[in-house]
Image (cartoon, rainbow, N blue to C red; front, side):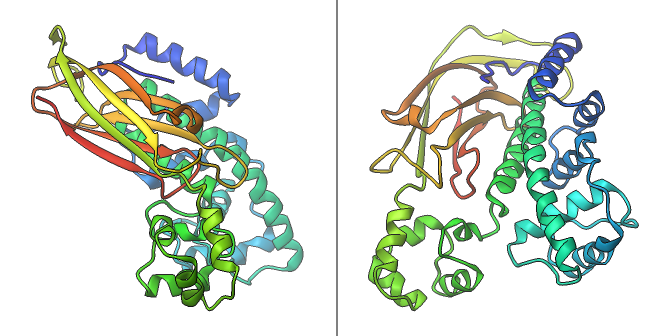
Amino acid sequence: MESASSSPCDKTTLSKDVHAIQMRYRLSPATMKIISSIPRAPDRQQILHKACLASELRSFPLRQAERGFFRDVNDHTAIPYTVKEALTQPWHKVFLLIQVELLRTGWPNKVSATARKELYQDLGKMLLLLDRILRCMVDVLGARRDGRGINTALDVLRSVRSRVWEGEGRELLLVNGIGVAKLDKLGRAGIRTIRQLQQLDFCHIERLLSRNPPFGHQLLEQLAGFPHLVCHFESIERAASLQLAQENSFPSNLCSWICRAVMGYDNDRPPFWKTDNPWVTLVIGGDDGRLLWFWRGRVEKLRERKDLVISLQTRSGEEIELQLACEDIVGTMVRVKHQMP
């Protein structure tokens, strides 16, 4: 998906776009109605809540044997978003189970071994469905030209795919061989990101984590595939000016600028994380949150630097922001701010 327009969509065009998106992701009309009700510039909680309301997730009823477990999750864990009503609905189960999984601190013990096994099976199915639902949200928010909304939906998608919240200082848990205890040891040494860990030599890593060779060397080999994205931006020349009718929160007097966005990575070889070459997204937004441009592609396309020459409609002196990140991996985001002439 690429978008080169910052003007509001008319209702007919938006309706056609949303219908095409529904066909692409094979979601029910009821789910599309929920997604279409997302407010402009939603926060992380609103995105996750709306996703959990999808009709496709109603097939996960809250079993009697699970009620004590979910009350404990809601009342006595560090999940960021709690449920303020009696726990009875399928969306309550999805909403709470996803959050306790993303904490990476282990599940409460208030559930039998049989019920725990069933919950793990449910979780795998939930994650597959949420992936589709969140990707659909990204496309719908893009059709609405909601740049802030897209960034938030991508944030939740990355977090769910990584099973750890973006920006919460726990991205090191993505690394094989690092659990909560080692995360705490590294944190006490001031190491909180994968990039910081990569800058250590293998002997230092082994000393910090009280491990013997070749642990440090193997860890650095693994980290060599973690994506280090880079992004540069420049405004080249002004094109014909536009007079757009002021509508909603969109500005009226816009200038059309020819701009260049250059994307790449600093890795010595193409990034390869876990079992795949990751996908990358670029979101360019105005200072009022409107979407100016969206690009998505494989990280392999950045091998020789990806050079995008694009036309953006901005106000004179407006500060725009670029967010480049791997779609599935937390800790990869690069932000670039640029003030237009």
